[in-house]
Length: 133
Image (cartoon, rainbow, N blue to C red; front, side, top):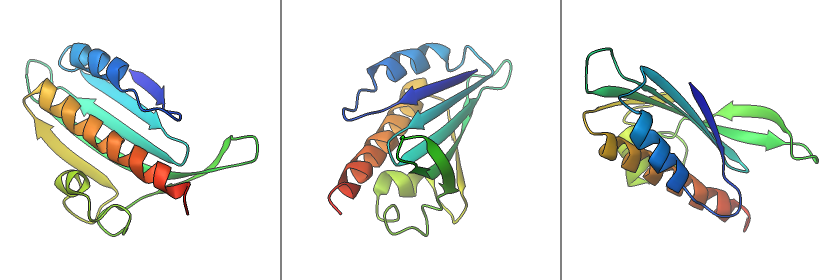
């Protein structure tokens, strides 16, 4: 099941927290697309049938928009090599090597939701800093 989440000028992840806490473990596969003005995070959560642990895949993209604010191009980000992301502890803990997609396994829904929210919060900060450049 795909859940698009659009984040504007104010970061509010309360709906995601509630929704994810309910659905992780209940559904075999969930995909969240977090859209910020300049970035997109694709998060895929897979729970094998009959298991309580789940695998989380995370891929980040830089977005390019036209004057009508429509997405015209996406570019995958390799956080391990990108200076905007390489110094962040949360990004380093998720992206442990030089690939575009990070993987982590978790036995705790709360821990998974917290890690995702921390990463989205960091992306939100980076996105807002870009406005000052």
